[in-house]
Image (cartoon, rainbow, N blue to C red; front, side):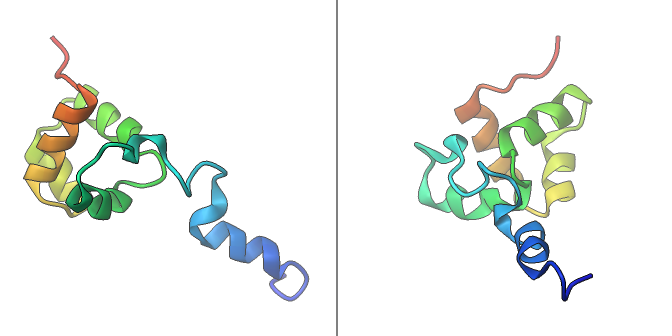
Length: 86
């Protein structure tokens, strides 16, 4: 299978698997230290954080899940205005 479709396999296993993954609009305006850590959150970082917050996970739990510091999650929630459900 890999011999017949190597370009497709490479694309799926790279960061280019999703068309918008290269330049995420959520990265605009982020401080440099957050831009470096945001890759750990996957191709849709804002959505990932929003979903986990909606599920009731704390900032500590979200940070542990993604393997980043809690301050990273706290900062992203403030920047993206992600609030806990009431």
